[in-house]
Length: 246
Image 1 (spheres, rainbow, N blue to C red):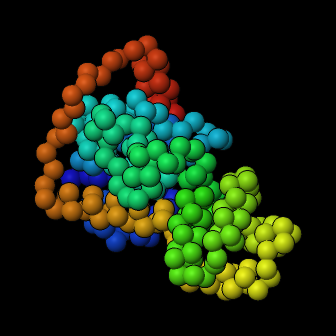
Image 2: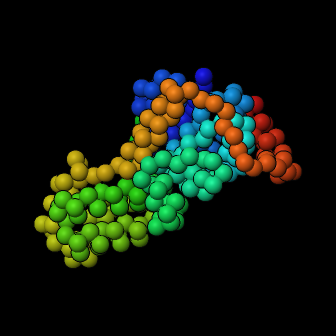
């Protein structure tokens, strides 16, 4: 029984390999889910995906996958965004970030965006996703590593940074320029290596475990309540995906 998970910086392939029955695929692009459906997997999990430089995974290819009887999960990054948008149609979101998007406190796609390294380095993150910064500062505040005013300042700085520039080093430097206590900033910096929270990784691992448990229980074909409309746009997208995968 085949199952796929599309992931990268949130869940590198070495972690997926520890779960038999689930095959790793690179971060998803438009057409990847459509092509995956042709091998009739039982489950598809979407974690990470490309955007900005290439077309991102299309809602309709996920809807088609589910209409074909495949259970589709999403978490952590682009998977969270699509799961929040398609939950009413049956896509299953997993994790804290999904719950935040579903309940609407977070509404900006850039919350999950980050810059990462190449496949050869297992897509190692180079910058920080805003959702991870929020979780990290919340934990630091709870543990009294930072005071409330500094926590607010750091969050505002992080939100102001473009996702390709968002690093803790940049945040701390800017906070110092704005007059934050050097001792307070040093204390936070010293705590970060072991204290920071990778919420995207946690959510991706939770989804991986959920999919593994689903496979152990046995998988029946997914049943949808909608009717898949085969429009001209959909047929064109299918032909384009087929040509790209040839």
